[in-house]
Image 1 (tube, rainbow over the protein chains, first blue to last red):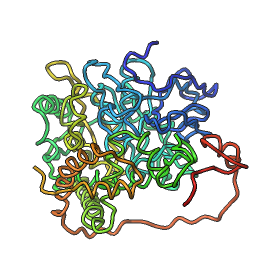
Image 2 (cartoon, rainbow over the protein chains, first blue to last red):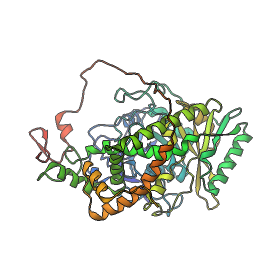
Image 3 (cartoon, helix red, strand yellow):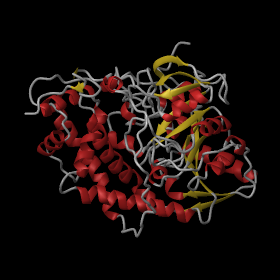
Length: 425
Length: 92
């Protein structure tokens, strides 16, 4: 099948075992998840020829479950973007409307599922990178609770925030894939026992009778009118099915984008220091001073957005600015976590539009980084609070563009959000 | 417009710390963008002190020798190696 949307960086078949729940199913894997013997580029020139010598834990689990991996999907370089336009391998387009972006950073994974090029896909979600493309492409995506899924073999961008998560065309499908990848892993010390014997798929019933859904007013105010209309209609569907919908307030989320970007960029500036062209990646040559050689290979092989985040992260951690930016961002993160905990004392799940906007046209957002960051307002608080969330198609705008509804649950509350989301998809 | 002024010298300084070569056009563009972005980050000054002790425990285990990549596999992606070692530029 031709790759009409540039969803894949590398199309290659990796066969799984002969038995298991995913026999006969195809899975597309984001290109920052290591696959033994198959190049893993992170959407970057820096790793254009990098071939991992080992599988990520989630890839081993896919193979053990009998899945066939069909390729490595396109992404914003190192996961840094909301549109899949920062990839060194060209932009992915949205299968719903080819003039529009698929969202990011796991845009190739969402596009592959939306276009029928794979039954399932894996993405990674540091600040919304599974949920955003799921919403923009009209598919389902789950960001698991921090620690539910092993990050071993995931090329790190911001370790304290990110999780690998499943995408599929239905809630039940995404839950099936989550069952395969969830659970503790000796190779990732942040994994937990929860999820060891999960059966999320059987929770996908859409049984919301008696469920209390909180709607954080702060995360609805900034949404486009069209997005808001579709979201309100979806809430009516929940009311009709017996759920109670009430407004809640999360004052801390006003600081979510700032806190998220300070923390993510700071972690990125440290994580990406490893790309110096010595152990892997493109070399800057072996003449002259080592600092100059490293600076040259990084200048040549890292893209604009990646450099911007490395520099801002370095700035935020540098002498004189650490307390002002990094420490304050950690305070904000603690506040966000507290705010969510308090909200879950009175409601079962929280609902927001996944993205406050409809999918932008290609080229529309790349020149204004801050504007792109602000698109993540509804997804980043979930990563700051380490919580699980799902994006499910809620309906379409008048011009037929998909709108996603995000449901957020308490820590390890995957079953609740999967059950509730199944009402819509 | 931006209140935080980031001058070209500061951009060059962090680029140097981060080992990223920038040409003059990059320096000017980043200086403009950083002003806007840092203005937004400065809203964090409004965050109240939060009394939150993270619920963390140390997880200890004995060291055990387990299977790992052999030397050839570990060196497979290096642009240059010598006698089983990574080869890098001179430390001057």
